[in-house]
Length: 141
Image (cartoon, rainbow, N blue to C red; front, side):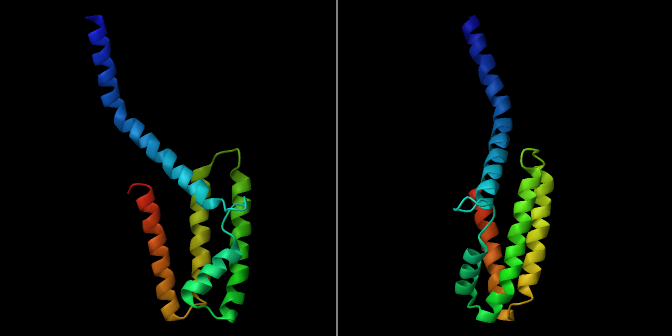
């Protein structure tokens, strides 16, 4: 009889803890996705500016002049991202870093958008929307 009571207590605990465990798993998954997105294939943190430029050039049909104007913006963004990662490394203030990263990306996007033609701007914003939808889908949202 005591074994049945113990099993019932375990079942009850699992029912109560399931939402908590599910939430914790979601938080861990989101964190992992954010970190893996921030680390490029060559081990450096942040996207590679040349790879980003190449992708933008292909998808937006950028002129050589636009590429030259965008390069320093993307390079500065990457340097700032690296600096932010180094600031929080080991100290764990990820929330503050995330907010800074969002502001950094928004500012870089504003600068990049000022270089684009209206048609390119529309395509660029659609690229961003698709990227955000992809992230939400990857996170189960």
